[in-house]
Length: 124
Image 1 (tube, helix red, strand yellow):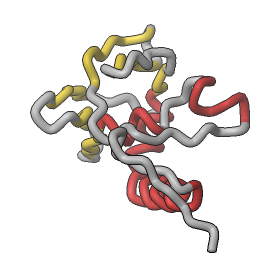
Image 2 (cartoon, helix red, strand yellow):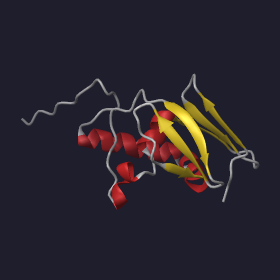
Image 3 (cartoon, one colour):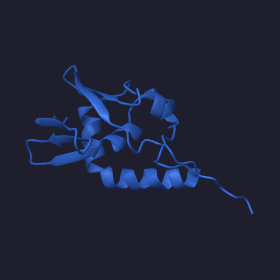
Image 4 (cartoon, rainbow, N blue to C red):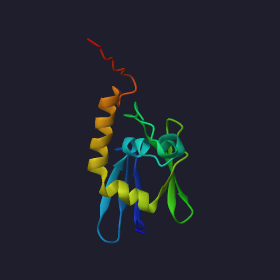
């Protein structure tokens, strides 16, 4: 288990910064964390539920959950996911691919990151 030695919420960039003893460093944006929350609301008990409209979501609180995870509270009210150390490290190491997969899923579903935008598909 890789436990971060440094955890910082950068409110100006809305990123959770994680540093590790081996020199690894990740800056995970709030939107990325919100749409990849390990909660049942997002993961859907094995059938993930695509999150959309989370472009401007912010992290309002970061709390330790025992010695194994962080509980993140987002300004859209979501606060049920416990981000374990292993899961946070996985998100950091796979961030680029996970983000591309998420953007592709949004596009395929005709959804948008922007909460004020509604995508309309014409069937011609």
